Amino acid sequence: MKKISVLFFLLCFLFSYSQTDEFQKADEQYNKRMSSFLKKNPEKTTARLQQERIILEEKLVSYRSTLEKIRVEEQKLVTEVPAPSVPPVSKKPEFELGESKFKELLTSAYKDNIASLHYTQNVVYSAKLSCAVDSKGYVYDVKVKGKNADINTFILAAFYQIKDKGKWKPAEVNGHPILYVFSYPVTIIFDQKESDSNE
Image (cartoon, rainbow, N blue to C red; front, side, top):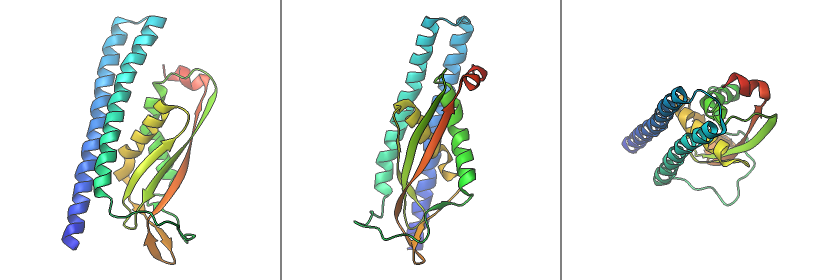
């Protein structure tokens, strides 16, 4: 049984490494294309903004493709299913480095991508990130619900980029670890000053 557990966690590690690598490749390709494009088109015009959006859309397509691969692979690793009804937990799932560190890591992972969307007005965006943490602390079935699909994609990708920067402690009922689905609110504040500084 111990050998199976070691193999399982080794597969999870290798899989998470490759998925982070895919996001990094998409970032590098986007940065290279944008840098080349902006050198050739220094003036801010409507045509330039439209082309910037096309380049960004290519990055989003790559991110979504990677996220779909992750979803499919995760389903192969699932060993537990949620109970029909979950009793009140005595302890909710916890990120071992603490909630504030989780928030800091998540924000750091999505902030550059969010800035690339070029919001230029005062907007508060709210989304809900949900995931299942099983009795061994393995996280899967991660989803983001919010009104903007692009922002949701970047938040979801950010979660996977930081997923292995700290372990998750499972929820407990009377001292026994259980699979538990929990949600985490994500709030992003866009303002004119911030948008100007990111240009």
